Image (tube, rainbow over all chains, first blue to last red; front, side):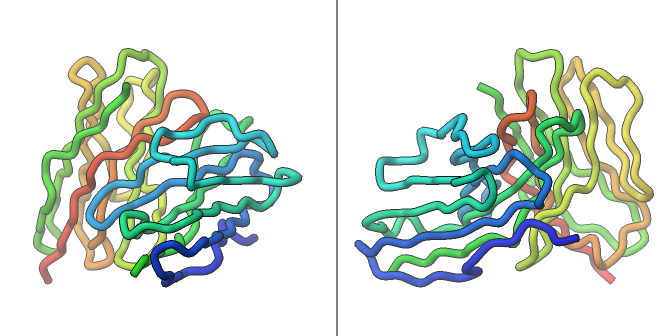
Length: 115
Length: 113
């Protein structure tokens, strides 16, 4: 049994470049969530999917951010024209939508540094 | 909008002692869930304990227990017999329905040997 995995674990990029992160959820989980965590703060919700449908997006998700989950399996989060303020840990989580427990299982995160 | 507040940025406790982390939240919903998550340094977040709002009985998981006061919108975490491996950031979180988690700012717990 594998947990939630994220790739890459670390990404350093120059301001203005595009970056893409990948998340592989637990295989039977139909819900997938993206959060952003800055240093010393709690995670903040960005967006979530049920299967391939993107059901909610936070106002934090500017036009430079886009997320996809083709075929309802893995998901990608792309940031275009990165800014220094995008530097953060990007966390992915998954859950079983039919479960009454509402537990979300987190991946190790992708730490983005924009120079 | 729901909010979660953790008023203790840092806490420390002697090994084998008991420590309580505080959390308050604000919601107009009656059916929701509360969680405590643990985030060790440079490691991923893991679930410590869960409380359903409709249950009056406080949840317990081994050395971890909660004091859930629904009317006061308070949800504290008690760690008994603290161990060095308990050192981490602890986040209180709220969820209503199978939707997004709303997290507090976190409490950094240090265990003194």
